[in-house]
Image (cartoon, rainbow, N blue to C red; front, side, top):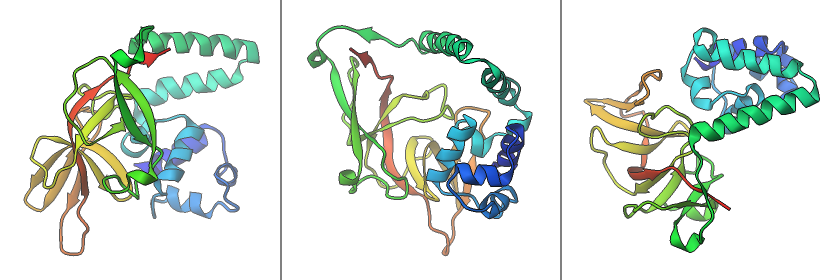
Length: 247
C-alpha cells in the first residue's frame, strides 16, 4: 500500500520524483522510483519524514488506500486550499482548526499543584530498531501527568496514530509490563521489521497476527518459520490514560 500511496501523494502535490528526493536530502530519484515500484520500503526515520512532507499519519501511509479514502477527499483537499491562501488568511484558518482540535480532544487545563498528580516518564525519540527493555539509557524521556489511579508498570510509551481506537487514541500514554510469550487477545507493544507497533496479538498455528481495533486498518500477519525472525514482544499494555495539560 505504501508504494501506491507515495506515488499518489507525490503526484497530488505536483512533485517530480527528483523534487521529492531533494526534500528528503537525496541526490537522485532512484530511491523514490524503487519505493513507488514496491521494490522495498524505506526505514522508519524516512517514513516519518515522508509523513511530515505530505501531512499524513504513518499508519495511514502504510495501511490505507489514500486515493480512495475519505481522507483524500477531505484532508488533502483542505491542505491544497490552505496552501493557496495568503498569510493572514492562513493564520485565521490555523487558529480556528487548533481551537476545534482542542475542543474535540477535550484538553483539560489544570491550575493546581503538579505534586497532586501522578507523573509518568514516557520514552520518546528512541529508534524502533533499538527497542526498549534494556536500552532505556538510549531513550529520551518526557513527563506526562494524570489524576487517575494507574496500575504498576515497567515503562511507558506515547501512542502515535488511531489504529487502536476506540480503546487507545492518538496521544494517549500506554503503560507496559515486560513479559515473555503473549496471550491471545491482549494488547502488546511489538517490534517488527524495524517498526514499533501497538496491536492486539493473536497466534494461530504458525501465524503471528497483529490486529488493529479500528476496522479501517487491516491485520498484519507474519508467517513464522525457521528462517524468519519472529516479532519481538516489548511489553504488555496494562493501563492507559489521556495526559493532562499542566500549566
